[in-house]
Image (cartoon, rainbow, N blue to C red; front, side, top):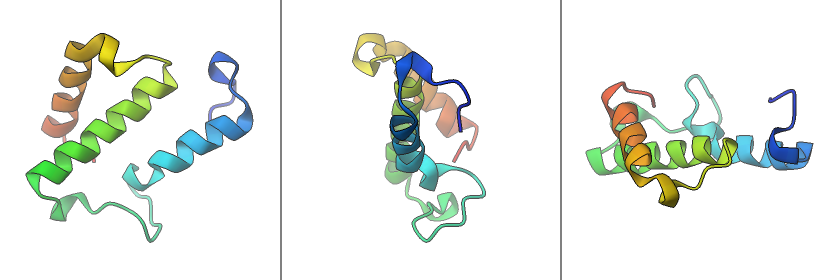
Length: 83
């Protein structure tokens, strides 16, 4: 958990963001975890896009305003097996 609230977020808002993306975290063992080894290429890209959207949200950055950066981050996610 983030110790200092970013951008004035409440603890509940931080927990909501972390909960929303936890199934994408490596070593997460919950029943809703994503098994990256069995994903199709399209599903892997979709999950990488979701993960990058979460990172952008944590940084309070709109992906639509930084499309080239967003796509570069998705490509990095795919090329480095971040899932």
